Image (tube, rainbow, N blue to C red; front, side, top):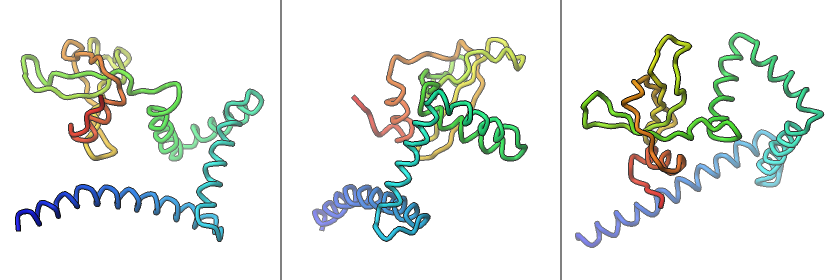
Length: 181
């Protein structure tokens, strides 16, 4: 009976992540396909990817950059839309593009003399504009979640880490399970 239980658990370890990944991909494909109502499965997804690439090409083109800047300025001025638009824009640009925000991995000592540390990313090295001299802002991603906490700590409690930002993010989000080499 122990061997049967062992095989069952090993089967779960392999099957659940595989099926969950396939299911999420299936949901993405079907949701996007339902937006366009094409008869060919996956055509809506391919069209969406093509549109995103086309918008990226247009956005990087010198002549059309001004037009997209006007649209961006409009969205940044509308009261409620501004909050949503700029939050999403900042989140996406933190992971993608030239202004990646999570590129300074650090270890933060929770209290002076404490032997407990948290891992995160410095997002602002100076908070002088907020009247907090000698403090820095550190973002702490949460494991298995698309959320995190922003903490303000004295700079002397921050130790820069000599590691790849992507590897540290993977380590944190996986709850310390995944270690890239």
